Length: 154
Image (cartoon, rainbow, N blue to C red):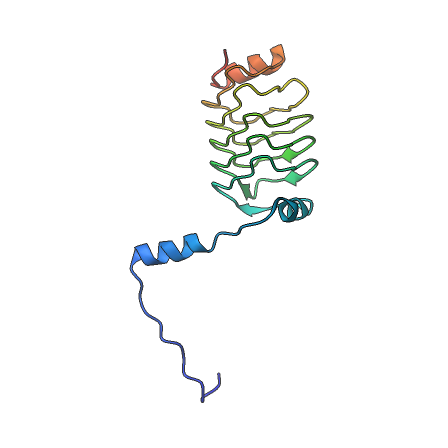
């Protein structure tokens, strides 16, 4: 440490100021920047992120990725793997799900209303409690699996 340079003054901050500073540290990326990042295996805490309409084709996401409450409405998720990812209450309406893999993902409370899942989707061992598949196009096997796991299926 340089003796000529004084230490910055540290002060205790009230919890609401500390929380505000944490919220201000959010990362904003363009769709192109996000695509470049995800191509290298996106990992981390991305709760509440808005990925509506983003091209996430062929991206591999694993259990150390948190996308709780995220918006994936209209995103292209073709050939994307969400192995063990937390997608609790995520919004998948109008998403493209061709050969998308949700093995071991937490989809509790997620919104798949009116999504075509027939060519999609491996839901094997995914958590589906209260996942909304109202109006979704599903195979008989997918529909039976979802019902068995407590999903909302019409």
